[in-house]
Every structure is written in C-alpha cells, then in structure tokens.
Image 1 (spheres, rainbow over the protein chains, first blue to last red):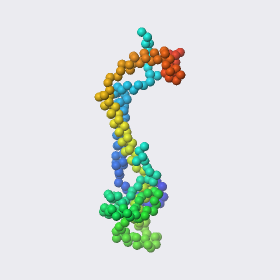
Image 2: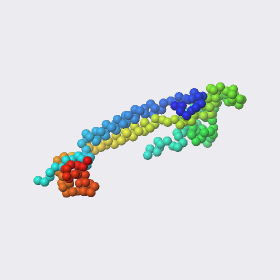
Image 3: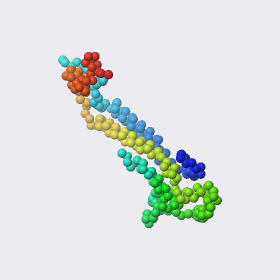
Image 4: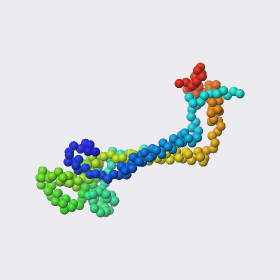
Length: 67
Length: 171
C-alpha cells in the first residue's frame, strides 16, 4: 500500500517484503482457532449434559407440589 | 492484556545489529565491539539514525557517493533511490505498515480458550458424579411453584417475575 506517499519515485522504490508467518498462515490460524472454539464450546454448552443452573424464570412451568 | 503484543507508541523496531543479521547492508556476524558503536534503527521517532544503513559500500556504491558530491540534478531517479536505500533500510511507509499478526494472536487465543472447553469435557467425563435428582424437570417445576407460593424474593427476585393474576411469567 503506497498510502500517504505522494512522490512517485518512492513508490517505485518499494521493496517487496518476504511474506512472514502471519501473512502465510494468519487466516488459517484465525479460522482454525475460531472453529476449534466454536465446536468445543458448542458441544460443551449443549451436548455434554452439564447442569448450568439456569434461572427457572421463563423456562420452568410451575407444577403443583402439595400431595 | 497482551501487552507484549500491543503496538508500542513508536512502532515496530528493526535494529540492525542483531547477531543473526538479515538486513542487506551488513555482511558477516556482528562482533561484540559493534555493540559499543552507534547503531542504525528504523524508528518513527528517529528520522535520521546515527549511521547510514549500508556500512561497507561496494565499488559501485562508492562511485555513486562520489557522484553525490556534485550537483544532484545530474543524478537519475534510480541513483537517488539507490542513495536513499544506502542510507535507510525501510521507508516510513514500510516501517509503519501494519501486519497480519492480529490474526495469529486472535486465532491462538480462540484455540486455547477451546482447550479450556476440553478441560470441562474431561471433568464431566472423569470427575463429576451424576446430576442430583433435584435438577430434574419434575422436581424443578414443583420447587418453583413452592417458591412462588411462599412468595420468595417478592421485591426484585423470582416472585417479582411471576404474574400471579395471569398465572404466567411476566413478559
């Protein structure tokens, strides 16, 4: 990006920089990490059978308890 | 937070006296004595570093430096660029250029948070016992009705969320 450079000569002087780790694998790491996160926590929150202790408000329908 | 990865106010530095020299201007391995000498730095707040980037000039470059002593209008554009690159490593634009480092950082953060979830899976599988029967739907529904009948926490709590006239949760 030659943003902010006004003199043509300097734009021509731009060296091509070797792509670093982040250029090569950044997208892969980002998406891979997000995929791991979403899949693991999706499973934990819904399938694992944890008792999360959610509020009964709006969720539980009260049922007569007196015998 | 990730302070070590946050951009410092002066941007990334590329100090060219590191032992593993990647920069073009310097040949060989830096000796211990070199660390006592003024160094070249690419820093936003140091526009004119103490030394030029290229230390040992080739014959061609030396000739160019001689030509530089005469009138500058005689220099071609390419020669001017070459003189610039002899004196400086990166341009300000190159120095200030952002990177894709945030992708690696964020991706790694997500990954390790995912590993935390794996710990929970291990715990559920190997450690926790069965869920007590008091968490079953039938127990919770009876429990909730009993709490409402007793008017538990009527000001801001559970009984305040229940509409006793319509017999339903408040919207």
